[in-house]
Length: 61
Image 1 (spheres, rainbow, N blue to C red):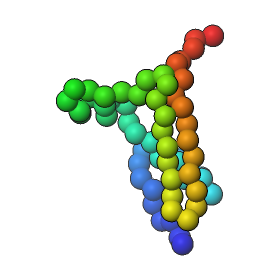
Image 2: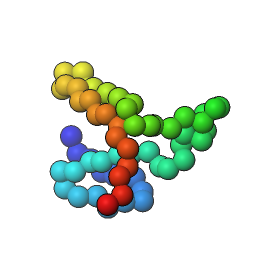
Image 3: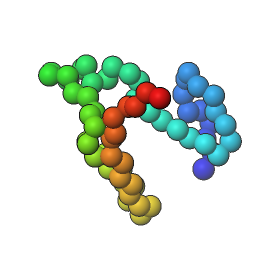
Image 4: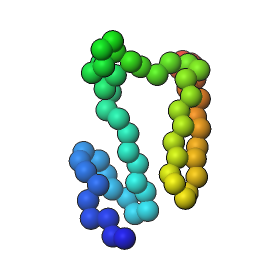
């Protein structure tokens, strides 16, 4: 597979594809929804596997 273009803005680097969600997307829900400490996110791809991440509180140091 040849990847021609991922999108903008951003810098493409060989062998690295990262995606994310822009800030404020949770505001589009009624009522607004945001991740909070203790929430569990699970991502899976059929035939590849699954990963689970638990949201933690931001700690300033």
